[in-house]
Length: 176
Image 1 (cartoon, one colour):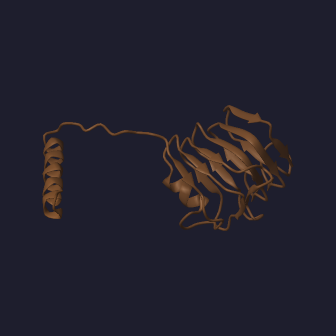
Image 2: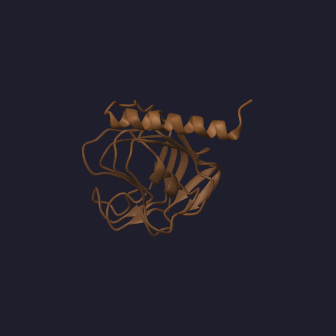
């Protein structure tokens, strides 16, 4: 059995060894792995929110959203890394732009959105529900009741792609 004092001393030695290795210029490899971030709040921002999860996510991570409706109050959600956003089903998980902003602004390649409803997005530009210039995969997603002033020459634009990029839509509903 070790005393707390002995244990503390042991940790100091380990910390000094690691610091010495770093100071010597030797690389300590980082282990990178995709993680899962769970949304726990339907608030637009703050701890546990989808907006906070998007800010914290790294490339390859998955953000899971339980059955809830998230109503945005501070603008579209920027998606800036190649992540997966996974709801609990299009009838159970809804992200709403509150008829005052777009919903998702996808700015990175490798994004997948699945198992949720995107609704009530509104912009004076393109892509009321989803705007992307980076490509996107949608699976089991309902994109309904979104509006945008620009894009394609029509008055209602649920979904807008601003460049020649690949968008894959699987078992989803896009309805203006």
